[in-house]
Image 1 (cartoon, rainbow, N blue to C red):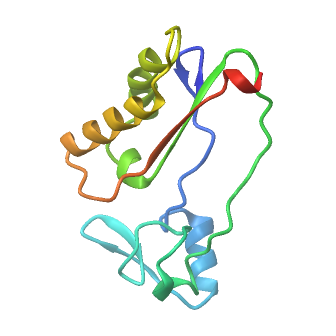
Image 2 (image 1 turned 90 degrees about the vertical axis):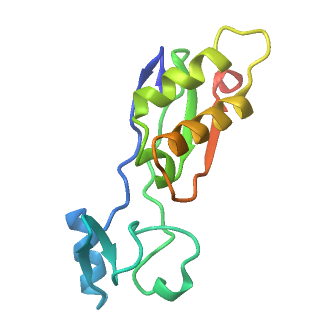
Length: 141
């Protein structure tokens, strides 16, 4: 989230390298190992929660971690993205790209902001799938 132009992480990545996620997976009979520097479930997936990946459903759950956040006037927009984005772009880089397209302009362009984020991630070497959504928060205040 952008709070007055400063990136604020609202989530923790669901990675098999997280101790709590690794323990959960192993307690369900799965295994986590490091393949070429990336922690993976059953030697396959690098995220521990998600939608899809049916062959790993015993260990990869779709249950999100949630929290309640009060939206205040300084809360400008949310950037939701997949690991294909966040593996290559920092939270602050993302805010710095989105903000000029969505804040203080006559016609905000969240779609253009999403496209720029995807392009930068690819330019930085992402070969994963990349999903991005930008949600302006002004309408909710």
